[in-house]
Length: 268
Image (tube, rainbow, N blue to C red; front, side):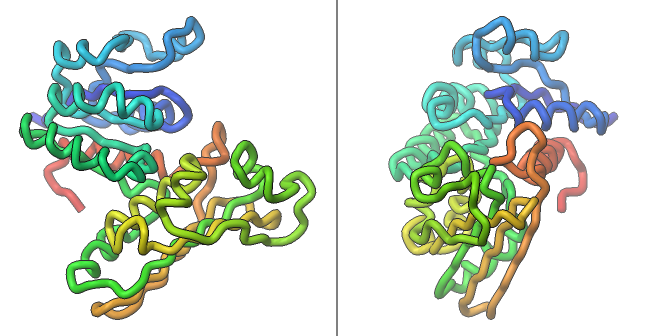
């Protein structure tokens, strides 16, 4: 008999709601048992029928789900992560920009070690993280991560103060710096640079370029790395989520894959 895993979602916004819909469509051996989201009539109404609304971290202890999936931002990690790692064998943390706080990951690792649980970091909007992490075993000399998105994807970010996004006519690099700086300033748009940094040379050595390009219709990532293994140049052009242009479809797909890995016999 195929194993079924119980899942609790922290956050039910564009990403997690899409993940839930994809799991249902694929008839995955996943049972969504609870969702923590805003306590408003609209948010509660969006929760699928038969799924419990989570109003406090203590309720996770009662549920003891097989996996907890977060995609709700730093504040949600602060509120829910310790309880999730105590209640569940594994927690997926999608809001990786939170790890710009150097104290956060060691604190959560200590909790996970106490309870014998694991912290899973999804590849998100990028690919070939396994290749980058493998290359890092021998040592990396440099890693650069460039993110290119249409101007609309940068609205509501500090790019608004740097560019006239509504009238931009040419490709413009508006930020160069470290992954720590990029994810700190652009947590929704530059989450993926933290994954690159954790897999490679760290937050302060990973170089990042952020680009607004009016000719672009997708969310683009280019990762260039050089080291003892050789050189890699990885390019991805992701469709944005229809409900949130700041996020890529691949972000949700990577979560589906990682959740399904918890029950799959063959894992790639």
